[in-house]
Length: 408
Image (cartoon, rainbow, N blue to C red; front, side, top):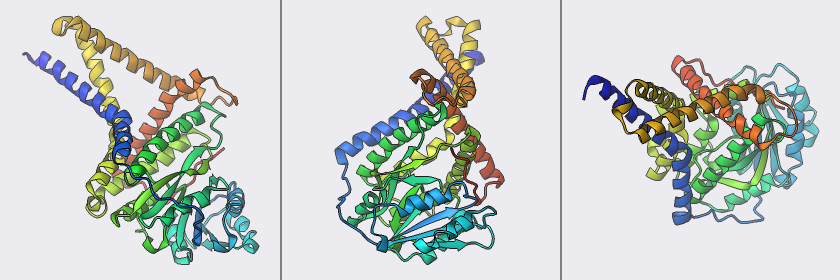
């Protein structure tokens, strides 16, 4: 075997391994947890008519466009009012967030204002210090909950083995644009995985959109933690308590106005995950083996998806180019497969490139073909955010400060 042949087969190995990695992340792991949930699953012993006292904390920074609707939505939740405490933790906003929140003081809404910006973690810690409820619930200002969501969420805490419960997120306007439809598809895909993980023991993909933990297990978060929701979930699992994804507790997320806003949000999340990896010994290493497997497969391996996408494309490009000059190095059938894979990748990235302007189309109803056409754009944009998150993590540019994406 000469050096040229060695390079060809080495590129082939890289291409195959990259495809296997991407297949495992997107298809293999979900299939594994779905099957495992059927074989060894044990659903939480949810009971009805369980009404502990609840403290709802809403971290806020410059939320004047959404905070009024958020508070009204929270006040209208189907839950005993005498068992509900609502706290808005303002992170030194410079808009009218404070004034709007203060207008609800006569309805029992508490405003906690930071003198200087401390980030979302600072607001959560202030909320914990003021909380009087048995259940501590964290929710974003741009998230709207169904009327029954809190009742459905809290009912799970009747099971003493449950320490944390997260709601199911759906896109508020999933039919208004192709970009939003792609996000809606993502949440449906995620909900299947989270439900299966929950049945095994715990969902490791906890999101702070509408997330509750037992107050007795809550402790102040380190000031430098970026992704607070994942940190709280890990702390719960370390105590051998379950993290439950409750499908009946539905909350609605407003789609980002632009994909650039979504990229910024995901960049922050990615940088936070890399931060948790650096804290492996303190947090992840203490989890049981099955939960470690879930965390690595569901959360951490996704961080290097874009690197393997790049490797798969470059390796495939080299293989196809090599076959143009040395077609006899492999069988005709294998050569055709290599060329076909190259064509499929080119089509995928062409769809991603052309999907950008199509995703800005604001017609209310879109054909299925258009929704599918923009899906590669959504996948590429969010994975590009992972690369940015790695860069921001390595350079130390990502901080605990956050700015909510502009939402429709």
